[in-house]
View 1 (tube, rainbow, N blue to C red):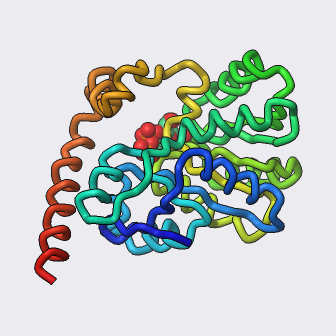
View 2 (cartoon, helix red, strand yellow):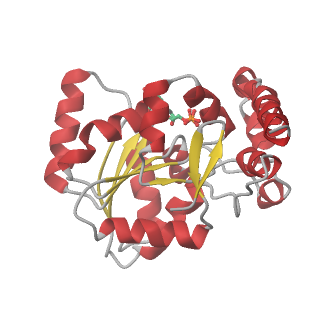
View 3 (cartoon, rainbow, N blue to C red):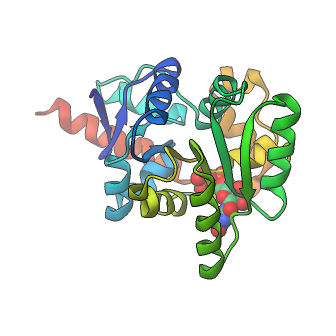
Length: 245
Ligand code: UDP
């Protein structure tokens, strides 16, 4: 498979159509498959966290969620085809399964939100097969109960929105058991599906300014975003090193 390295994280060089096809193939496979959607912030988190990095680099599909990753890949001389946002991939999978042929389970977000997301998406696609939903705040005992429920329901696609790296570690913990076919670490996507958090208007996405819109809406993200210039700086250093080789 064609993998592209950005600061030690290996991305699949796929466009949206190919990413959807890969997920559909995973659904008809025997085992579980992890899908990771790193943006620059997550790349920086994984860079210095060996366990997380290993999980990502062993995942079945790693897509560039942020435009910063695509820009970095260009700078490194190994361009990725396009940004494949996790939220957009999920929306496309809803489209694919709107006749009820693909089953989903939503796990994540604050109490009540995952159920609201389930109701909202069923308004749009009445036949969509959402088997269940659970909040992303739980203790160890509740984790076992949630896993029991998911194990009995056997969803094709398990959306896990607990923030990175918690969500990827959680999916990885159970992936070998094969009671879900695709586990997607989906960050705040369940919040967006529920309507609690609005996705940026199309114009912001088109101008590659979605990050800026999120910052305006949630100023508390500012501190987290300070990592972005650090990311570009690291990329410049590696690009320079590669040039001098
Ligand atoms: N979250 C959760 N359980 C936790 C921590 C976080 O369900 O223990 C949820 C949180 O409510 C939000 C999502 O995880 O819906 C994290 O979204 P964010 O966009 O911050 O994801 P990241 O960019 O960190 O992957």
